[in-house]
Length: 477
Image 1 (tube, one colour):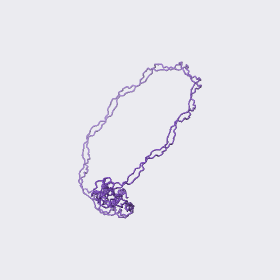
Image 2 (image 1 turned 180 degrees about the vertical axis):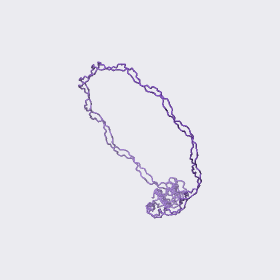
Image 3 (image 1 turned 90 degrees about the horizontal axis):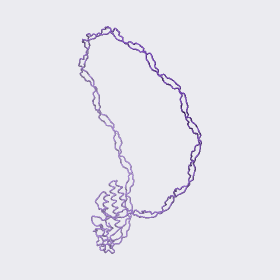
Image 4 (image 1 turned 90 degrees about the vertical axis):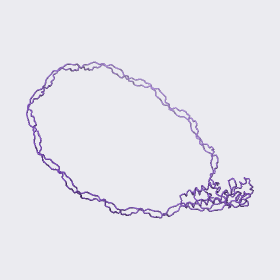
């Protein structure tokens, strides 16, 4: 039987393909779903006998389990393959072209112009001016002046001086004299000795032990289960995957009776229930005991012998030299200097300035003002108007044509081989179960007395099936 989840996975992987291929694959999936539903309906036959018996109806010999047979059918499965295809692509090539453009060029020209200028022309003139000068004259006169004449004089002055006097004095002093003596001295030294002692220490011993542990394992497996769901739920999920295309039946045309006698779902609008494949994990919890090797560590007291170095004090005697300082009195003669004051006299020369009046002839100059005249030249600016010709530069814009080269991208159609993933339909042969005999009454679907009194139902159920608690319908559709 073709699994439904494989079709769903294939549709999810192909969402990037074009619409035409997706529509073809959706039609293929609908055909596969119709074949699976028809096969299930034929395999299950009439499933309402047990429910009629439990409801207390007279159903003696109502249903016989039809023997299931399998026939081979060919289905097409989408398969992805890689093909080499030749496609036409557009490539762009750089091409240089020439065009004529108009360029504005600035041309500089010289132009002569005339202007009037007013120029100040200097002119020299003469005038008579009067001026005053001081005329110097020399005169002589006698003047008195005072000068200081130095004069040396002498005077007697007394002064006091300290005269040093040296005397010999006898002086006593003390000195420390060292005296060496030998003395016996006791001292203590630590003599090392080795002793052997016994102690106790913790030693770790490792032992291996095998124990049994209880282990729980899940030895289940995956299996595909057929689950009966309402057709509306299956149709809504199918519509959501198809993007709500088309306006067909919610069951996708898979709600036909296995007996060939019309609808077995009950009403005219709904389809009842359908069976889908579901992958479920079947759990199998197994508890078993497993031998495990465990390593244990134990602390054991152990006696050991170790050596200890012990320092024992020992008193010894030695002779040492000791220096003792003795104070000794001695005398010595030293020179002592004393100072005596004596009065003495001396002559001192000094200089004094004596004022003296003197006379001298002094020449001096006096200035007498005198008025004189002279000719002075001066310059004045006389304005004069003149015409001047000058040259100016004028810029004019001249249009000229110029050829320029530019690049353009020219498209070119080129055939190219590419690798494309293509979904192709692969033919496969599957086994489909079919029903070989009637499941009700006399081998047909018209036994109304034994199956609820309706000739249009299979298994004794009328078309107006209101709940799943009644007859089983036809194939449980």
